[in-house]
Image (cartoon, rainbow over all chains, first blue to last red; front, side, top):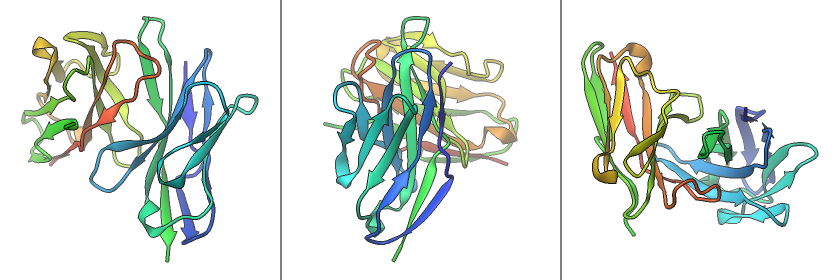
Length: 116
Length: 116
């Protein structure tokens, strides 16, 4: 069974500082990994995804993530955050269920608070 | 391109009452998902449709929750009777293909349900 662990429930960071949001996963098969962002009172928006190929994935709003198979991690990074990055971030893993369809599991989320 | 539409955006009911949520996915999207997001947690899949057939409803509390996707387009999720622990945001998402592991899920804004 697949699972996703987001180690930090909240991450405060000063504006223009770098940030890393951690995500570890477990799965018995090949996985596809995603990061979503959720702004207050809104649905989830895809930031980036790892499907195959280069382990460094670039997404929207200056975010990037690195897939590390040996450490089963997919940490999200941004070199310089802005106030507008204040939101909740969810890591998700998708693999193929035994029933032949895709199944997505989300982590519990990390609230990023950017301090002016 | 229009996004995933959901209504209502907010709903307050008393326990033991019934409630229904509506979702209209992006045009042409074959797969539709309903998630429950309890405060402080990640989204949990309740039910997944491919066209108008159910492929996964393993986490749907079937004694009180029901969902349908007539004609393979829009969908309705119903709770009857509601319990206090059903207070959550109900997210609808859709993706283009059937069983596509690399598919992107597009989320609606959600319906925030409060059960008093």
